[in-house]
Image (cartoon, rainbow, N blue to C red; front, side, top):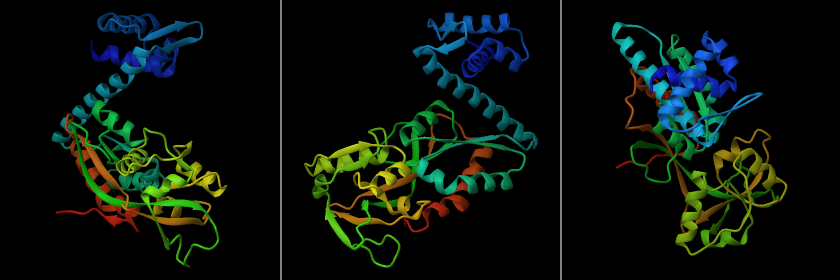
Length: 313
């Protein structure tokens, strides 16, 4: 395969049409069709299903699209990195972030990047930690800010903040101090099994961590609903549908400024770890190295306010 074949396939797949892709690439449709067909022959898989309305990805095509985009992005980064040897400014920085971090830091991240690197561009992808790891491996993103709950080969992670997790319930009106969401009661982890939980799906890092801790206590969680979006989880908790296991940051950043019953979990206390992650398979450009330094010094502290710093030593 060659880069022209990959570029043709990616454009056709994303635009859903050979005609639209040909216009975008300033070429003709037969030439584009030949490139994609040659790629399919070399891979020995049909990547696109042709129909009267355009094209759709086959299962093989869905997998190949992620790899093709990663390969093209790595080639682009390599070219940009070499251009920096001649003093050229510019380049592209791709970062993946978790939804919880995105709510707090996306605006400042983009603004800080554009101020620090006016000649460069940035893309911000949002996803669960599991997906961010996959995107790092494929080369689709340079760095990720994610929850670190498991060892991952070929991924370098450095914990930045630890966040204590609490049992979050609807406002009962009698379990708060005057401080915002200050917990004044505790509950042992094994007792959480009595509460119906509104909790993210199994792909979510915090879900995996909480279930693993409960299993060590011989406890099976009572899952009422699986919901990945924190905002939606808080909506359901507020309506009395169930309880959540979240950090205080999730409640204090609630745009509706609602009050919730907050109970500290003990025996054991649960912590999630926010980490910066990169892939050891892919070389970082100078732009990416500088952007990560800017991220650590100027953006991560915005999320870390009120959180415990990562333990070192």
